[in-house]
Image (tube, rainbow over all chains, first blue to last red; front, side):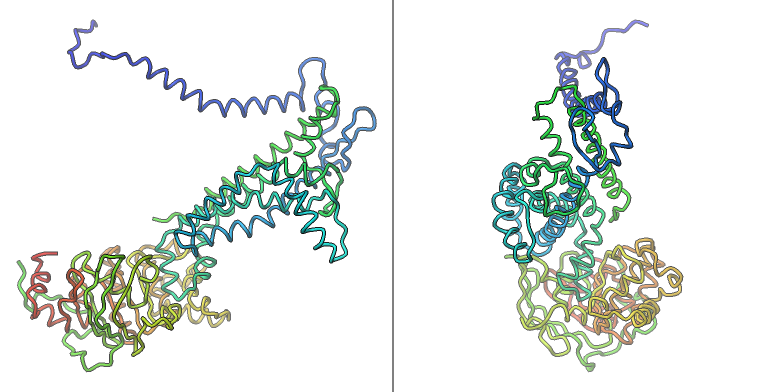
Length: 318
Length: 275
C-alpha cells in the first residue's frame, strides 16, 4: 500500500533526532552504575577465584576452608603466609558493633527529638548541623579519635578503672565510626517517623499519653521496619568504613574481641596491603581481592536484608 | 423542601429522650465566652454552651463552622496545633481546664475522644484496648484482661473478637476498628467522651451499630458528638447545638431544634436550604 500525501499538520517540521540522542545519553547515565558494579565484581572474581593467564588466583593457592576458618592472618609470600580471615573479621565486627552501640541510641534519640519534641525552628537548625556532621571527611574523624578520644577521654576514663588502653585501639575507632553513622540513622529514622500519620499521634494523645508515651509506644513501633532498615544500613556502612579505622584502630590482625587493643579490620588491611611493596601478582597482593569479595558479600547481604525488612514489615496506612 | 414537623424527624435510638429538658441536670461541661484563633484567623466567636451530665449533645453545622474546633478545645487537643490560641473559660465538672496548672494528660483521660478516621495502633486488639491503662501504669495482666473484656463488651465488639484478641487490630473491618477505638477510649475510664464524626466513614449497618452504642453509653457517660449527618444528630442526641461561621447560633432540646428552632438560620440549615 502506498502512502498518500500527509496533511500539513501531520508532517514533522523539526527534526526529532536529538530526542533519540538525549534518550541514549540518559540511558548511559543510568547504565553507568550498573556497569561499574559489574566491572568491580569481574575484577574481584578475576583475581580471587580464577585468574586468566599464567597468574594464580587467590583461591587457587589458598583453600576456601582455610580462608574462612583460619585464625591467623599473616599475608606474606612463601611458606610462612597464613590467610585466615577470622582476625580481620573479628576486628571488623568489633568496630561495627561498638559503632552500633553508639549510633543506634544516639541516632534514634536524635530522630525522636527532631520529629516529636523539637519546635519547627529547632528542627530547621538541627537537620543541617547533622548533615554537616555527615559531611566531615572520615580521615578527620580518624585523627579526632587518635588525637582526642583515645588520649583525652578513653585513657583517663579507663585508667580510673585500672585498664590499659593501647594508642591504637578498636574502642576509639568504633566510637568514632558510631559518631560518623549517627547522622545516617537520625536522618533515615526521622523520615520514617515523620511518615507515621498524625491521626495516630492524636489518638494516642487523646488517651492520656505523654509525649514520651506517644514516641515510644506508638510512633516508634509504627515506624519500626524503617528504623530497623536504617540500623542495618548504618551497620553495613560501619563495616565498610575505612580511613577512620586505619588511623585510630591500628594494623594488628589479632583474633580477639578485646576492644582495648589494636585491631585490623578488613578495610584497613586492604589499604595497608595496597600501599605495600609486594609484587602485583604475589599471593599477599591477591589476598586483597579475596577480602574485597568477603566485604562485598557481607554488606550486600545486610543491605538486601534491610530492603526485605522494609518491604515485608511496612505498615500500610490508608 | 422538607418542612419542620415532628413527623419528619426520625425515631430516636433506645436510651435517648429528645424532649427531656436537660437544663435542670447538673452540667458536665460549661463553655463560657470562648474565642479561638488559628494564628490571626479567628474561628470561634464568643461560644457559650452547657452540656448536661449523662446525655448526648450533637454539634451540627456546615463544614468550617467551627464545631470540630470547639469539640477539640474540650480536651485541649488544639494545644497540639502550632500557633493556636484560646480565650474564655471551659469548666469540666466545675474546673476551668484552661488554667495552666491543669495537666492535659490527666484531662484527656477524663475527657476521651473518638475520631472520624478509626485509628487503631499497629498492635494487637488486646494491646490497643490496654494501651490507656498501661500508659497510666497498670501492669497486672489479670486486671488488664478484665478491663479489656469489659470495655470490648461495652463497645459491643467482644463477641466478634474474643477468639482473636492477639491478632492485629489492622485486620478488623472499618466498623469494628471504630468500635475498637471506642473500647480503647472507655478503657481510660473517662467521664466524658468526645466524638468527631465517628460514623462518617462507615457503611449504614456499622453506622447503625455506633448510633445504638451511643444510646447505651449515655446512661453512664456524657457524650458530645460532631456530625454532618442531621438525621444522625436527631436520632442520637438529647441536645443539639447549631454552629454557623464560628458562632453558636442556638442550642436546645433536640426535638425543639428540629421542630421549632428559634432562629431562622437554624431552620434554613435543618430544612436543607443551605449547607
